[in-house]
Length: 318
Image 1 (cartoon, helix red, strand yellow):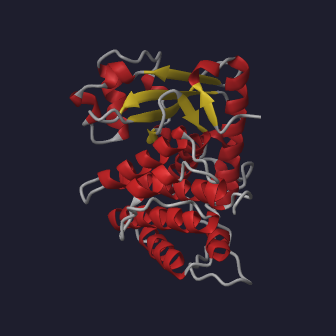
Image 2 (cartoon, one colour; image 1 turned 30 degrees about the horizontal axis):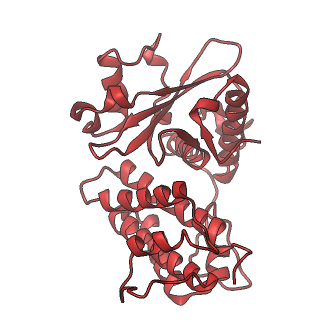
Image 3 (cartoon, helix red, strand yellow; image 1 turned 135 degrees about the horizontal axis):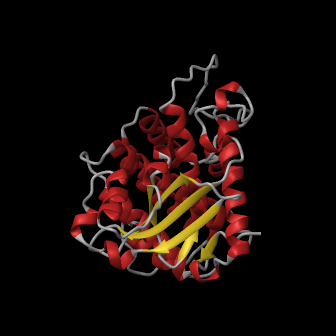
């Protein structure tokens, strides 16, 4: 079984094969989520709906001059007998202004090709809908959460860019009761009912409304606040000891250090991961492209779900 975070140094052929199989499963799950039959007529715009060989590239690249990194991911057709996974560390080659300030994910791929930093036998075989840049919290590992977002967004883009008209209606609701749960890939209905905090539920409901209306700046800002509120609720639930000079209006900068104490015992890696989530939140502004800002919101939603599962639900609370 794959680790949640896979060290790059452990990526042998067996691990790559298992990872490709896992990503293919995510692809099919996302098709089902949006109502597409992988073997039906509606599946034609979805390249990996049929189990055809592809090559997936995962490039660890520079994001900015502050040391943050990204995963630049894309798939391309191949003529091999089986699918291939290529993972490349390109941080040194991409730690330049000319790369980090390319405005779209596709332009970053073109930069690598134009400057002969990436050798592809036929760049025209790249599946455009699959090109995606994602925040990478730790350049030494691959996060399954990030890779799942890559696959889900690939399917979503294939759907959005196709001319399919499904005779289906999707019902969304952000008002949850203890008796009613709606299917949600981030498990927010269950989280909201479990925590049962008016403050947290109101904040998260407003974020989901902003997400639905594509108000990315508002959504990202609000999700950061939700994560801070969840940290505060976790500290209270588990009785984490606060220092005597605890501020009246604490923020993530105050929460993260004390979450390293018992009983939550947050690891240094997780502290870095959640710190990076707030750095990502702070990087969103009104001028971000829609795709970039949406990905930021997706990562923040994943961070909320992960924190809830890993720390709020700890069984060793006082």
